[in-house]
Image (cartoon, rainbow, N blue to C red):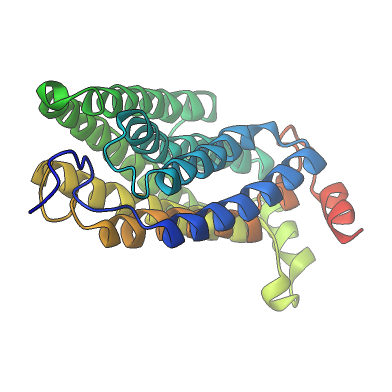
Length: 282
């Protein structure tokens, strides 16, 4: 007979939680190093998202055999839920800085002046809704359905804005490929022949595409999970959360470790990434 006190519907896996504490910890630590060396402060939300993931999985580890503890459940639910919108905030800022870096403002669907403000505003709305939803779901059964609906709304907002962001990025990529600026052409010529070590504005966009895809898949999963409802098959089987959230979000962090935009954009204020590359090689 199932334990009626069990909030999760299962006993959270201690080994799985420890593995992702280590994985998120390593990636976040390296992001912190990359951020401070390049002084790319637009990556602060991304690093905070990594820290929240670590705390969330620490709470899951502490919930092993303590699956009736509401505070731990509330913390892991909320922190793991709201980390991806923080990733998205940095991703939105990267595109605007890339457009400016390439002197290609006329090729962007959305004015650079408003691009970051527009997408980050949507991200903040999504973030706040998911925070509120996660909090309400953790207060008790009477508020769980309301919290779930608020979370669903936040995820829908995130999907809408992120979908729009992918469209804007793709159109910009298409336009600058057909009508390169002198800066974009020089950037590619400078790195030609470097193979997989090549880093230029194209690799920045590749990183954005990969991270956007991973966040979109994760958000669709979460949306289906919450629509199915508390006590549903997905929510009561831990493996889905790890496969479609933990793995995907760690992969998103790892992609940004490899394709870090500061290698090209530097601090994002018009400098280049040469100083960053030198510090990484030390």
